[in-house]
Image 1 (cartoon, one colour):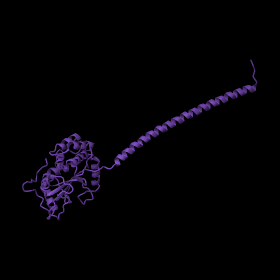
Image 2: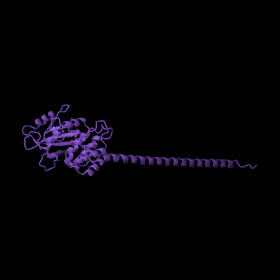
Image 3: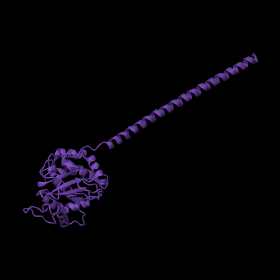
Amino acid sequence: MTNRPEGDARAERNQRRAAARERAQRARRQQKRRQRGVRIGLQVGLGVVLLAAATVVTLVLVDSTQPAGPGPSSMRDGGITIGQDLKAVTAGSSSSPEPTASDAAEPVRITMYVDYLCPICGAFEKTNSRYIEQLVDSGVATVDIHPIAILSNRSQGTKYSLRAANAAACVAQSSPDQFFAVNRALFADQPEEGTAGLTDAQLKTLVTGVSGVQAKSTIRDCIDDQRYGKWVDERTSAVTGGDIPGSDLSEFPGTPLVLVNGQQYEYSQPFTNEEFRTFVITAAGSGTPTPTPAPTRSASPSASAS
């Protein structure tokens, strides 16, 4: 057996320890690099996720703040004015949409804010639509109809009020002279509050099935696209917030809101045509033509829109 000097043995042990320490340090450095790589990967991945989420939120916010765009050209201040022969009144027409009680040549102005899912609106329509038609058709009155959607959350998530008001707006844009008849048809087939209401396909069939409606293909596309949906939403918010064209009201009392020459009809229920006739005559004032139908057209107090 060869004996090595003690100094050589000690040196050899020190070298082995130094080598072991170097290996341990390399292992720790490699472990740190791996951990750093994992952290960087997680941070990058999280950053991508957060960026994607921020992009989605931004797009939603941008979309929700986009202006609604113009409404139908025939719907001034959110409503369409129907005059003599049940034709839409346009700028420059001989039928003025702003009559005054002091001018005997001016027709009585009836203004209505309606929701096509509102059962009370339907009851008013059933009781008084024929009478209003006779007044307007003969030139004694004009009627401004404002479709709004305050009951959009009362149709099992289908937003029927909004969709029906949009359909009416589509008609106001593309076939305004048939708006009065379409308005009547929407109430004649009015679904019950709390139901899903009519589908878009049923709305298209109903609206374009009204006699005389023009541009049927355009109206169908308009209903499919909900072209005036945001505009209806915007007008509904404005009206319920107190911006009520045609009146001096600062608070919206609900639908139906019916005004005659700016005066609110505070109805009792059940509706009677006699009560509404009396209100029209009173609100019209002595200086306004008596709001009765032309002699050749009879007016029954119990006439129904159905």
